[in-house]
Length: 345
Image (cartoon, rainbow, N blue to C red; front, side, top):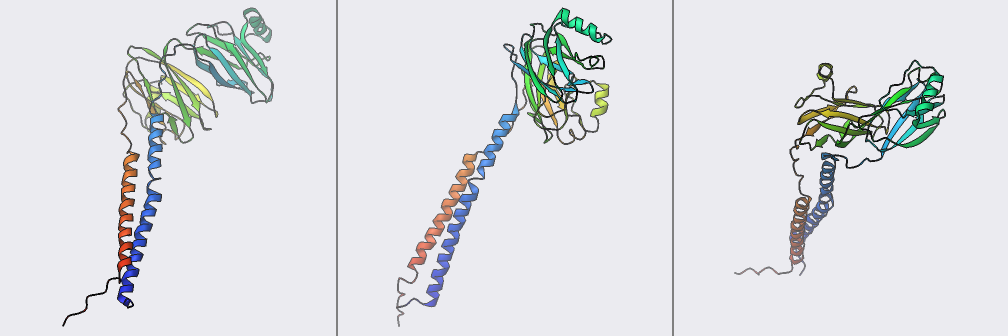
């Protein structure tokens, strides 16, 4: 006996329903499980950017600096800071101009060279006192020099260009040696208007404490790393200019070129939370600020959602959908197989 049209219609509806539940299960499996990946990635980013604390330097580490030689004539930056006493120093030199320049580093600690000297007097000074480095860089070329710093904390060594009259016109700078043991931290700046990381920690127990922050420009924009001198003061884009006029910053490093690495060196007088910002136009308003925790620990960040829970819920939902679809598919196979009971009279 052929099944009635009503029976065939019911069978088709059950099969369509079973197919729909099965498709829903597949869609949930495809879209739901990968959705847990961004949660895990966000958790990893948060952990990577939360703290950067290297602690006191146990021994002098190799120091690397980047220096532009320009036709102004000038060195950019004019000062290199943060080198540890006795460190092995490498300076990458890039002549951005059309004239030759030299990078000549005086061996005489804490001795500012008289800028009124003639080129011959300047040459005699270096012939008499010697130099830690002396390298000529042709126009448009790059070079590198490596030398060992004397083991003298807090010393400053002047560097000049010996090309006649470039020093006299202002082509000079100083390599400043760290004043002593303290916290040595790493910081980065980005074109997304963020400090990476935006939280730094100095685990100090006695004060004052010397802090050296190595800053690397990971983008191409010009930035500053400008530190408030007062703990517990949090600035706004509207008041930071007047604030720094009244309270000069503890550090104000100027990062002007891509991949530039320089140091901010300062002394913290007491424990507290100190804010640092970028004072370049619009950068602070765009979110470029961070906090330096000295002698204190920042509150723990909220734990990210567990990806195991997310994946478990997704898989459970897939199982339920497949179960419903299977039951409907099985039910559709039995529709019309059992003859209806004949009516009784």
